[in-house]
Length: 274
Length: 194
Image (tube, rainbow over all chains, first blue to last red; front, top):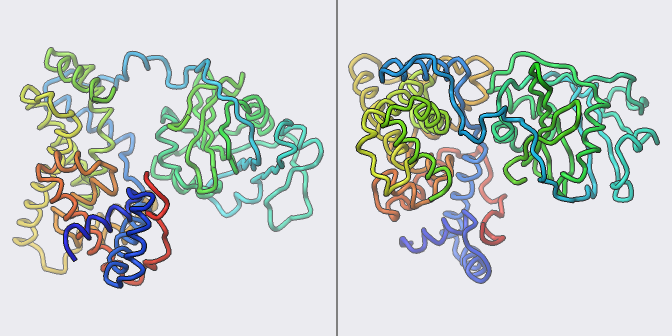
């Protein structure tokens, strides 16, 4: 096996080959055990490394780093981290004119009642609405009794409790993009919780579940095609507003999302694919 | 260059002109990636934090030498990797002087749940078995998503060398994984271009 063969295997494993080149390489794999073995090894390693969670600094570590750098470079200490001029307003400042009309073909909205514990499924609500219902509001679906609780221990209860609340992490000033990066691949409230744990959130906030649902309905036109489920990642609570961040699952866990202001349902940020 | 790269060049100029806010913005824009590389390279939180700090100190102290022909991030990651190499060399010397061969450098903080999530022992152990050069290549390309060209610039070696290191590192990782994962379950690569 020469360098060219190795390059071919790596290109195939990384998904950089297409069409006849990919087909030729695959034929070679089928015919040559050594080739196949090397390809399998590359795929295994790539998958393995893909599964790693990105390590991040805690807020305290970040603060210490900034202070130490300022001190050692002789700069003014305790200067707050400054974002680019165009972002000097709060990161969740409403975004206008970004609407991308898109109907939700088949969506399941998963709203975590609580994070991180075995009891989370007790209050996690899953709403299904089929293609025909896609154009109707979730509230209408709920009114028709479409709500389905995931509580396995009490499958008979098919209704939401009145005044249901969602207990979600306060995400402080962490931006949507970072939340999405961290929550990438999560497909349930528990896995969202697990993946966000390294961000070090310590407190939670109770959100009015109906209010969240109403905003999701209002934002229907902003939702991309192909969503299978929507997960609430958390909420940034300030004196001015509560900003809720959602993650979209297109079938392989959270990949994208958006944030909105809870009291008026205005969109404030799109995820990277938005 | 990208918007980020252009902005970085502006910020370096502003920093050299005495603008502290430019310094803060540059740090904020790159600190996560620098720290992630350091964590992967060093496997130890405290060492990674030190290396992150050392990296930025080096970069800002030598900011006047930065040439804008290359992206600031490429230069920054090069300093990051070299700083990590220095830490590894120092650590190796220290260990040779004072510790038995069975010394396990896994971050003790990784015992708490917060750390355990991010410092998965299988990944950390597997990475630690690689030589620093192989580890750097695979961390930059497969874990940080740098292109082969950018990794080549960062590591200051030809693209072919990066390819070779990444290929061999993956093979070594796959061997060290042993029975951890089946190796033929994934069809990645047969569906077309990225």
